[in-house]
Length: 450
Ligand code: NAD
Image (spheres, rainbow, N blue to C red):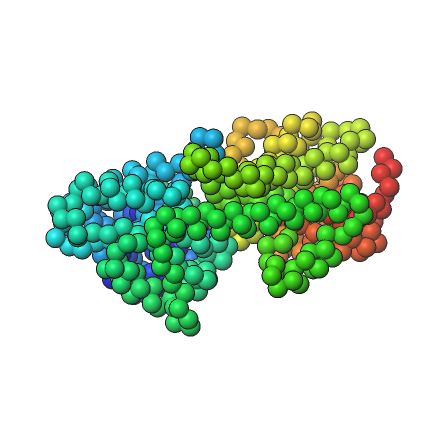
């Protein structure tokens, strides 16, 4: 099949690679010429495990362009452009509509060919239908095109696996021909069992927003449970096991942390709330999830600042983890952004950041460019030298198996504030750390004698 994809971000690049891997001829288009030039030179603009290899192996089925007319003859054209934060938390669909308009114009001369336009970007209900109206302006024959809402559920860090073996593929359409075409396109991804779910267009759009909101709500609830457990001397890890063993609840997405980040969960939660408000429906739980998370994003910094408040010196803080989660370079809305900003407000000393992902670090560096108090390290131990506290923001595997004795030897003060509960509190105490984790009893080896 001939596939066009507009937008070469996490979703566009991964979709292009995985469709090409199955033998489809895929043209990936982006208005950012620099991005396309970099992809041509095999310098991928994003980091996603396994992506480089698939692109290398499927190269003969892939082409990259910044000219929209190159995707115009495709059987299916996907829109996978970004939907950044809009006003009052709404989802900004400007890029989607611009992309749809340029695709509509470019496909005008293919009016005799049946084409399907698929919206992969996460959009509020109604957007796909508006996109259809926009395309209709350019089509001579109404029956010769169809629109599909095909929201994407891949997760950064395991995007290739998610795309190759999706839990489900949601297809919102009113066209029987589009349904057949999508069944054919996704058939190679359904070899073990059928996971296509067909539904109405608005249902598909809302499914995506509700799924992310449900996940966000679980995290927010566990964060609040952790804050309570920490206050009363209970242990959130024990509670997590207790809750997660109920099959109606299940064990995943029950890990408390420093507040959810990334380009999806925060935006989708606020986008859904704002969309509902405009539709005249108040979603009070959804509003509360967003508010709860905004507070949690400062847990790491506020806990560290409070813990060291009696130490009369300019403090140096180290944060391990820059991206919003491991195995990605995406720093959008990462807890580290909030943590670093808050720490910089409070200390006359330095803030140092380490992340195993070079791209994540350089994105963070750009974010704080010009700030003379923040430093970026590519060595996990060196960053610690003489610092007053280590703050753990992500649950990278590298952090889990670190030599804690060396960590203690390098730090000026053996203080670890851990929002991911990576270490055993008892063991940390034995090693002489002051160890504050999230929702677990504090270990105060030094009893704050400074
Ligand atoms: P991104 O920000 O990484 O990339 C978007 C790309 O679109 C950029 O390269 C930009 O240059 C390009 N673009 C913008 N306007 C364009 C236009 N008019 N024509 C051509 N290209 C254009 O985005 P992303 O993270 O891949 O997300 C894309 C969409 O998918 C969003 O709606 C997002 O919410 C959704 N989504 C993202 C993920 C994820 O993990 N990143 C997962 C599921 C769904």
